[in-house]
Length: 141
Length: 99
Image (tube, rainbow over all chains, first blue to last red):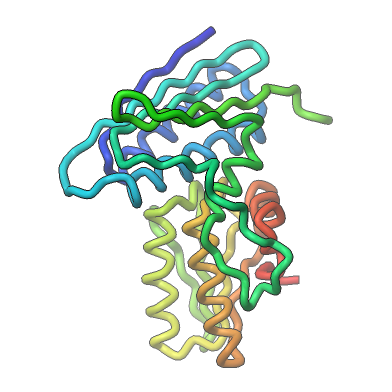
């Protein structure tokens, strides 16, 4: 098992820094490109939501990200001290509506749900903790 | 990331590569607005070299696709990479891709 632990600050450039590290991790472990792509998008969407909605002040806030790579599973834990936010409580967007009238809100959470195999949320010690799990499958030929 | 532009008459093409994250989505919006201001009739967003497209990017594409369409103009995604295609299909927006 490999663990990557990164403390990010609540700035957009920090997400890019983590994405670079995820790409390095994916390359090191030979993760299937599709798996890595879906994990990166889920991480991007969750961190973007934290930055956008999580904090009432302009101060710096640490966001702790741990990535655990097992043989068949990748697990990502994200911990932030922003306002309580359970993404699992948000309804999925209605994708059956016509394009011209369809609201675009909620797409990020929809992507997280679809790209990851499991998502768990809890609030503990004044922090949001989100755990996302993705099965690592061999790419189909 | 720099967004490359190609302008042919009133047709503008933007070429994006790598990760289309929130920062790139903001830049794309600035560039699209500049094209609209300069009376672009057609805007193509070429995503052949994009390795991912986040929801902020989709929002920009959808917002200006609708705005252009309401004026009888065009904004479409062209040559999406496999990764971008899967994201657009999963979020239900394949219609913004040029057929």
